[in-house]
Image (cartoon, rainbow, N blue to C red; front, side, top):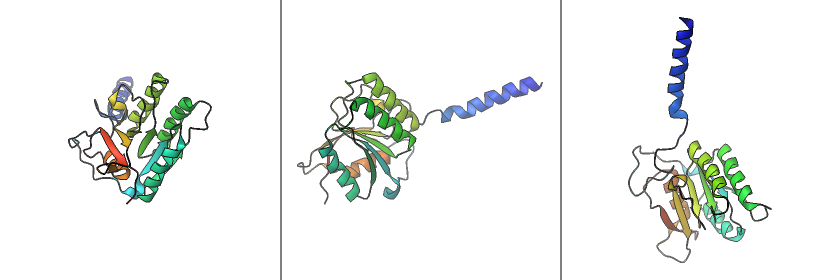
Length: 190
């Protein structure tokens, strides 16, 4: 009888833990409500509570404009610089995994080129998806083939008058609000 009770207990424990195995929704990226509203409406995250993890591109000058825009908008962003790394691809993947362990609210990857080690990037981005953290690609060179690995792709165009401020676009993703998959954003602060 004791063995039966233990087996039932193990089965019940496994069943209870299954929903916790991944925070990722089936068939969609974390933070990608698309143009419709998500099934579960978020009350939103306070800007003061948002921590952005940004993985830099190979040229840090454009990243500085993004970081300045986040700072001006009151969003806390930690930056991982890759331009000095001997192997920027491996360093970027390691940075993504590190940001997952820091439990940031969103990860922004600047200048992502998955054609350079697609398997490594898929593994790194899957770890983010499993952790339930949305990913934003900023001016990507080559996006992942699996659209479930990122919530949005931002293209910075500071000359376009109809570009959305980058902080507002980022908060749409963090709050899982309706947004286009590809957004033109601006780092110009008003």
